[in-house]
Image 1 (tube, rainbow, N blue to C red):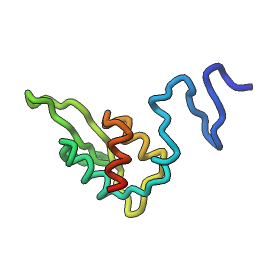
Image 2: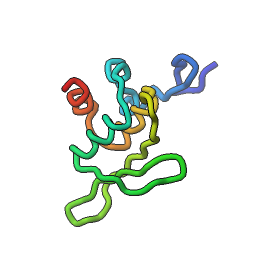
Image 3: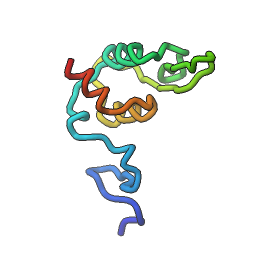
Length: 105
């Protein structure tokens, strides 16, 4: 039996009471590369911050120069899975519709 607030989704579990972490199936079908993601984030005011052990950190600064938002990006030579892309969307704080518009351009 499932724990309260959980629902089966393929091989994984997700919280159904947190719709902000669940993105549309259309977004998951888009094929995003490392370059696509970094170009989009740069256009939205993010810049490279530092290399971490298994990924890079990108940051968006406030007007006063303080870091506001961080996004962790794992470099890949292929395309990101929908799970990885959803994590980056959530971390960026940028509405999914803006990511979709960029993908369609």
